Length: 237
Length: 237
DNA sequence: CGCTGTCTTGAAGCGTTTCAACACAAGTGG
DNA sequence: CCACTTGTGTTGAAACGCTTCAAGACAGCG
Image (cartoon, rainbow over all chains, first blue to last red; front, side, top):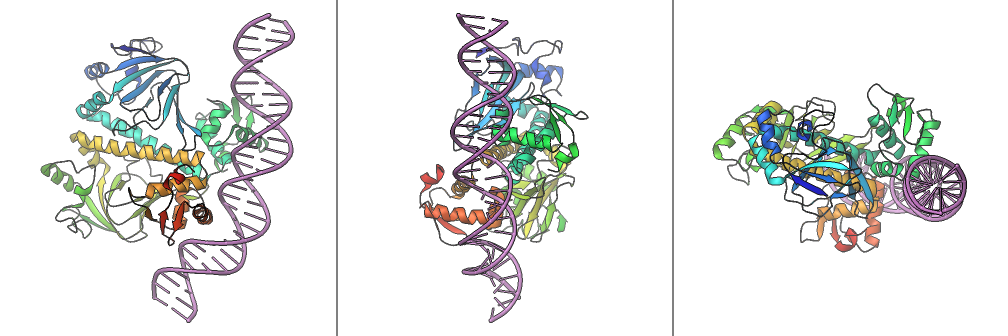
């Protein structure tokens, strides 16, 4: 990992690209409602770093005292079950953040984060972030909104694991991936990762996709692309 | 449900009991760091209610605009999977709160809450709560801590469902229930609820407990009481 | 005491995993 | 450009874990 301090996110990933003169921070939902001057104050407390593909941001067991905001690239977040089996929790896109779980309790990471591609990441130390929260309560509300929605997601996921079989979990996941109004999906990950995310095996994913195709619900175009033929049907599997 | 407004929690459940002259609010972690005057301000924004055993506080699909703080009794929080199967998410004890998930997004409840026993509950309207958060940023930090820990819990749960078999989930759950330094557990719920919580069936719970007993890990004293004989062993199941 | 609900036990069936073999695609070096 | 390697995805068959349904045991409560 290569690391720079200030001016905020001045490495390749964070400075102007398609988005003009903006820094990475303005693209982050929890900050983007603030005014000019406040933004600058925040940027002064941000560090930036670049990671190679495959590099690890943090591991379970390490002290969690940093907030990571992804500026460019993709980052994998996963956990190890007590038996050592790995589970994919989520994939960060630019603007997403991680490391928060332990930011508010003096705790250790329970998950792992690693770069799936070359990645530009902005970081902020726990104490700096807490100071900001106390100074600008509106940021807290934004973070609470984000936590709240993530908590909802996570409980929904847990309930799906607990109450639904693989075919149904897969069906619902495909619907989650389907862009509004469209009917074609590009899977964002390999069978192995998809299996890990859905709590099953690549073999079973393969077979269930075949079954869904046989049932007329979907059509597999290539290994990563598929067309949804019967949205309503998938919903009720 | 019976409802009263002010003085805060003055119904039977909230006024002095074992705890002296305190109101329910001072027992709530997110508020209990505040000063005298601030407490009174908060109490002015709190309503109180009593629920009969079995009564529902809210249902999935209803608008979520109220924070519920349990003062006395027990409350069940559960979800319905897409296929209609019910899953127990958690059981609230006095001091715990619920309704938060949707408090920060204009959203609908996705879960159900009902009183397991007669219950005294303090409520606060969304807007009143948001106002408090903006006025006293330290409350936000407390709530963030609570959310953060709950998010961690939930992700751990999801990972357990996804990566571990029933025997292991049960074993870890028993360890979670085991009070520090003790070796006897009183299960806080029926087999049916335990099964729902762990994403299995009552029959399987019964059998797995037998297996754990046969393996020398535990000893069943009665249907709700058991003794842990091999803590280390359970951990690595 | 008998009723009702909770818990247990048994046997059959089903969904999923596992392991092994094979197909296929992408990338590398001769 | 082809052969070779490596990784990813598929397919088949057997084994396993769990659920389901049905019946019986037990406990709590009128």
